Length: 372
Image (cartoon, rainbow, N blue to C red; front, side):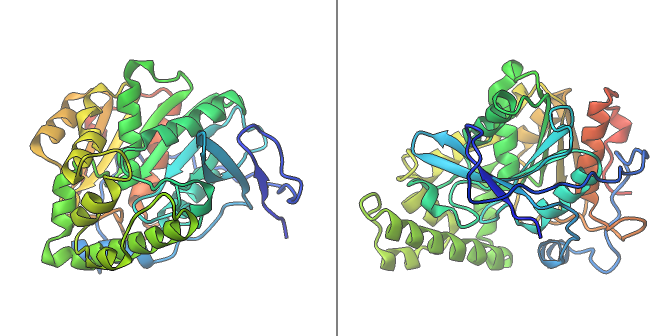
């Protein structure tokens, strides 16, 4: 069995691990699946059914053993990525995948998207946000929705150290906000090697989405997030007691994501309060500046991600953005019937979109369809 290897951001190989031998994948069919309409799986039409099944139903992992690599994103902070390289990595498209809140590089949608990208001949970089994937020891800070610079630091290292010529990003939920925010902040100054971006169920309007998460029908999701966030703060307290002045009893009394962001995320991340954090960290304020082809997938029945009218208008007015809004799909799910593929419609659309961009083909409005 191949072992993964650990490479530091300067490209040096850690001596204790051996390198994997990555088999070359069999290319996917040359068919262009971009723009195919989404038809929800017959047994899973409801928003909650889609969301829950999309989270728990396993994907088939077609990825070879990874190279584990640490990237410096700040002087005292590193993040861990799992990298899968094609035989000629510099010439292949590289897809950087960014997970959502309390996810990791092992989240099911990350594995599913990565497997499809690998089989399409792409390099795959599965990113862990700060502290995620059991990496709390890699630095003292927490993670939050404003840290688009971490994604940018990884991209810049891949370009400068590895000489990669073609990069694309896909982010899910919170990760989608980071990807869209980064592309908007880069604007016309985006590195020429960056070719495309995708946001799946991106949390672009953070305040309204956080408040929707507190709706009684969505409490199951909010409690899941809060349980993980509390556990993560306790781990940081144990590792960096001098940095955090958090009463564990008060931590247990936080009953909403907004409460958590007001008492924990904001003060320890340079924001005055939760509202200041939501306003400054939202990609909604910069998506009009995105200058590379970008796909945004959103389901109208997403239980808690809200797209405000002003944000929707920005998406629709930017000619570089293909905004696809379906009636069904839930949150980060988009489960279709498995007719000829695994039914993971958003993952398939992501890869097909990037392939279309790589071929230099125009994105006609008629191709950006939702349900049918």
